[in-house]
Amino acid sequence: MRRRNLRLALGNVRRVAWNLVAKQYRRITRRFSKGTKHLRETAKDVRSGARGMVDAGQDATAHAYAGAVRTKRYWQRVQVQTIPRLTREMSVRRELRAAARGNGPIIVGPWLSEVGYEALYWIPFLRWFRDRYQVDPSRLVVVSRGGVASWYRGIADHYVELLELFDTAQFAARNAERQRAGEQKQQAIADFDWEILNRVRSQSGLAAAAVCHPSAMFRLLRQFWLGNDSLQHVQEHTRYALMDPPPMPALPALPERFVATKFYTGKAIPDTERHRQQLREVVEQLAARSPIVSLDTGLALDEHQDYLFKNIPGVTSLAGVLTPQNNLGLQTDVIRRASAFVGTCGGVAWLAPFLGTDTFAIYADDELLTPHLYAARQAYRDTGAAPFTAVDLRTFELAGMTQVAANSTR
Image (cartoon, rainbow, N blue to C red; front, side, top):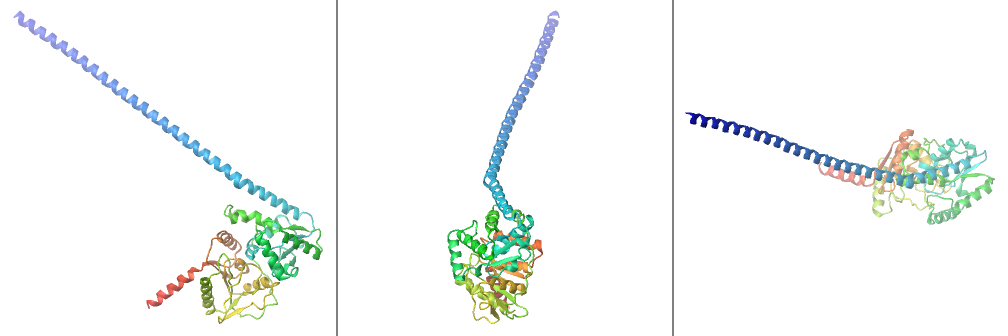
């Protein structure tokens, strides 16, 4: 009995001991598991923190690099664009201030460049010059060609006709020589300019006159034409306005209602047989609907040549009426009186909307026209000028094809 009780007691002791050991083992295991989990989480946090530090470092490096690149580009723009622009503008303004100083006469010109630049930029630039420096129009003596005194009404009280100072052939040859020497846009005063200025001073008694030369305007606006300056820069140095020139008595009798046309060779419409045929068809279609007055001059005063379309019923040419001394003035009066103007995009096409005439300016290549179209359209909107529509010559081909297709389905 005692032995059995002893065995039972010993068994109970073993079980208690085993339970204690098992309980301690489970406790140690749980603690170890928790410790291991904590270590894993700590390691995970450390790795996450390390990745965060790496990402933060990469972000900081990227931001610093981007900032450095932006700063470098900014200073490059300052050096390449801003500083030269400010230097150029200060130089031009200093030159204009010097010309405007005092109360003496100021020779404005001579203008020797394209008609389009004169109409779209030079005249508005002179309005700005007059207003900015408070120059009385009685002081200004404009020197230009083709009888364009009416273009400068309200800007200058005096006008000198270049083609009364020079023989026409001599003027054309000397101007072509100036252009071949790289002075197409009058960015500096060339020898021919000085010769003209000396003749004006001598024949008009203006020996002490100051000079406002087109080079000031060309230097100031050139970067806009190259696409490096904003339109705002042009607007800050121009004043656009509608024009109301007086009638020209030298004009012959014209139809009561007509369309004025002027097509000439150049970058906008290169001289090709295809373009000649296309433009002839345009004139024929216009003449079938309305009398046409063609502004071809028959004069060789610059590198542009008129497209001539003979034997088209309903077309009146002014070639026999226009002279070198009055050709642009008479063309201006014809455009002013016309119900619409259709011609090459450039030249007097820029002038026509300011005269109150609906304008359709045609081109075959607009590569060099983009900045001028941009400036002109804004100027027309600002002044309330007549509608202006630029038309690709290929549009007429498309219209013809569409008409053929429509006729074939009838």
